[in-house]
Length: 207
Length: 368
Image (cartoon, rainbow over all chains, first blue to last red; front, side):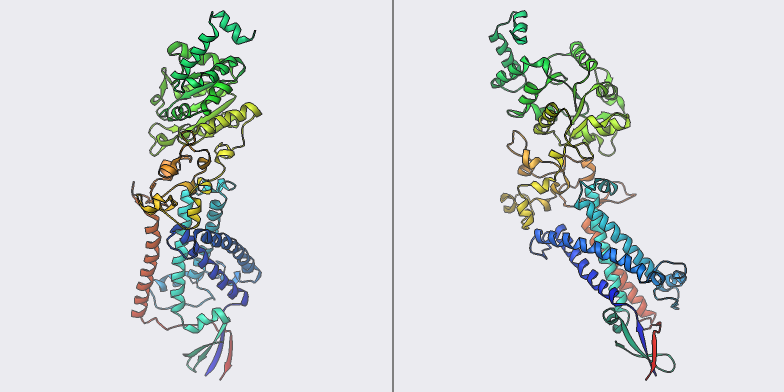
């Protein structure tokens, strides 16, 4: 039998993940309170707006740092939508549509994952643009007009918030479909896997 | 002997006759005889003041009502102290050919203040005619020679309800019309509430007369002094919003206590105007004291801000004419659909025996 150390995420990635999660949860909760005042998480609308306006800047800073880190750390070569990383797309689609039971592991991330995170990033960028259009409607009037007026911008902002919720549900589901030791790897970075002579996994434990 | 005295002498009128005439004029204009002295003073200086041409196209005359029925000193200072209205189809004494000649005379002299009330019908041009001439035709004549164009009310600025979908007459506001005709929009000011607030009108004209320039405007050519802040940000009920006290039902105690109308669909958060400060009807009331804001200062508010009693309007479903889905329903439905998809995926995964099967990329190995 042998033990294998499987490593996924460097410390900056892990810290970024959890800070982004906490921040986005605060943004969504405060946003929902602003939309439904009776959804009273922060005590008053004033507090909810304060939380929303502080965290929106953090959201932008995290996003900018993420872009920098994505290229500076070389992560783009693993997680960027390059032809190499996209090569298993057909298999991934077939596997998740239950058209085949064979799942190829060609790279660190499967192509559907890469596409999803790319879309999430685009959605976040739109979210930020709409948000700032609503925050500075006079200064950014051209942006407000681009999104079809304040009301339409508010609708877009609200629906993207729900897409974030939707993404998070699927994300948690797919994580929970994996062994728990791997979820811990989002905190510790790595985990150990014990494999017997025939290659079967005997045990997985946190590192 | 000043010019007025000369004129009175030439017409063999006494000073008392003149004041009687002013009182009659004031009564005819619905302003009351107490305004007669002001009218007298204003008329005495008539030749020194800029002429005003006031045209009315596709509208309800509500803006004229709003201005003329305002209390001292709004319209008084406008008409009687500042300007000389040479042409106003609704309230001028002249009619027919004499009215037409008055317009022609003023237009050919140029340099007048043009007040536009109502939208221009560009689709069906004959939908709006005055004396047999279409609004497009008149607009092309009166706009270029004007020194200043003031579009009053949402009709003149954005087309208002006539321009709402499907806009059968092709109604457009001044900004769009002047841009499409290649006219200089730098001399345009739009006062976009429905109806116009007399304070906005008098303030704009006063600014022009005293400074010789237009006030600073936003991208819709609205003066920032009046349209630079949201209704919501200046609302007298704002403290209730910040503290989370809301009206949830009309007729409730919360409404009696004048709590915030946000949850009733008040459009204050989407509307730029200083209504909470200048008020209406001679500064006695405004919409939030009598109901709630429906966003009448905004472009296309009949299309964009409807579902007036919902905080966030419904979203038109593409391809299904006229059906609008509630934004809340779409959002919650999206999350529910995601949950259902997850459950379905989990069930099929279990049935296919996928649960617990994994493959990994090995980083480091050691024998144990």
